Length: 433
Image (cartoon, rainbow, N blue to C red; front, side, top):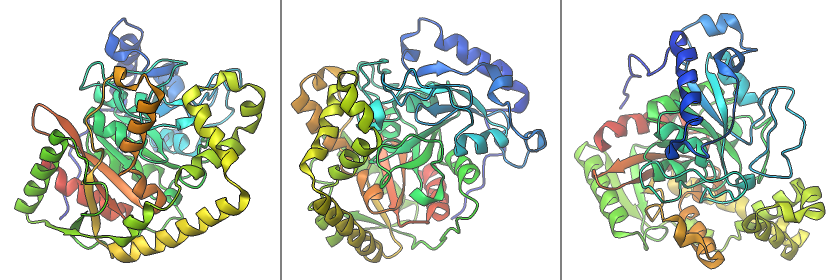
């Protein structure tokens, strides 16, 4: 099932300058909806596209001429400081070149709007940042936006950007996408370069995108995908719902929306089955937290040791857990993950995992004041999405809604199935509206 791209997109090269000026005016206004979405704006459409190949920019081949792109504050943008949501990086020198994916988007004619707010170091699925503020949820006022790509999701949801560039270590694109009613795509890790992107976990980090619909995510992915990657287009057109993982504590509204989506897919002719996946049961025994704890400590050891008071306490406590992991234990964790990747791919056997992106609707900020609640809810929202990161797969969250509530429907496939998964998502999207 293939659905063609829309004939037109909500952007054009000719209108880019006017659109970005309007966005900057909105962001600088007193509108509460735009507060803390961006940590810094770039300087106009002309500067934002500087360095792009003019021949490429003039060509309609990419489909991205004039598209507005928000950039998570993990990616280098030439001439601007990359702060990664931290205080300890705010005095760093400005980047002297673009990150690889920023460069690719520029050369396709896209316009970079600004750096978006995020959880410090991308170390949470909730999106909260005590240093630069946290944007309000676009659909549920007074509730968290989800994270860590919080500002990116809101920028798309409220019309400040057409595409949000972000990262996903355990769900950081798909969680905020689900919470704000848009599409979030986590590609196969090795299919998109992370050169010029600050790391949280080199083992699990993926660079990806968010947009209003799956077709735009597909277009953006094709722009940023590494040229040397050969996609595996083979996917069995069958969805599998795991009965033994991630389905037992859904909020009633999430359960109802998921059931409704499954019915719609079946009515549209898609095969949906329920199955027990031993690899997911085994995932419960893998200490996934070790990857981000150990690898972030290694990456930011100087700041952790010299100025821990500058780090968000919620992030600092996670980084400190690395002290409990020996080199031998960490190596064993890496080995166990490698075995799980193979087992998951074999068990899925080309099928597509179908689950709710998150088990809950976005909670109110007040529910996260106590560390015990913050930690519990953070683990809860990361549980389903982290499957794709740990199992080295690709995954997309599509919005599903009944007019009163909105959440995400997640489709996850084996590594390098990106093209096939995105095509499938585009085909499914019209049936889920």
